[in-house]
Length: 134
Figure 1: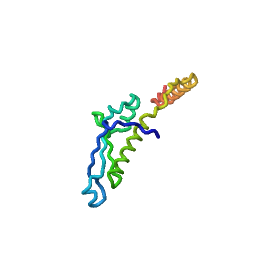
Figure 2: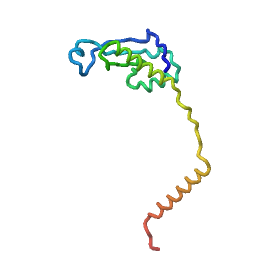
Figure 3: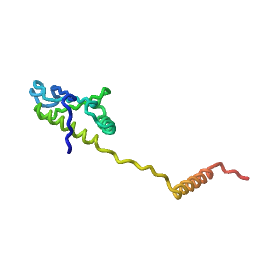
Figure 4: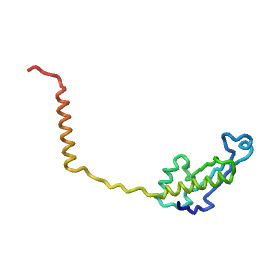
């Protein structure tokens, strides 16, 4: 898994108190990490930027800031490492190129089958009309 060089000036870390179980440790110590990344400073190619925006979803703000919050572990250092690993994983997935789709056209036989099916269906529907006794 390639690790990307993320410039330190593009990152901003905030330590906040985590929610959930944990007793007094959670209430007293700011162990959760909120990693804010200025995506424009990463210098991503256009295809990777589009994919990153798609993958990030609501974690990316309209100003181009990606917010990753890590609070799984009890220590700041472990949460910090987790947040950076998640950023690396997102960047790796953003750099994967999708397979280019090759547009195809239906063949003559397929077109003929479709027309035949339409005619058959039309005949069935015409047979449902009112019956006249002439």
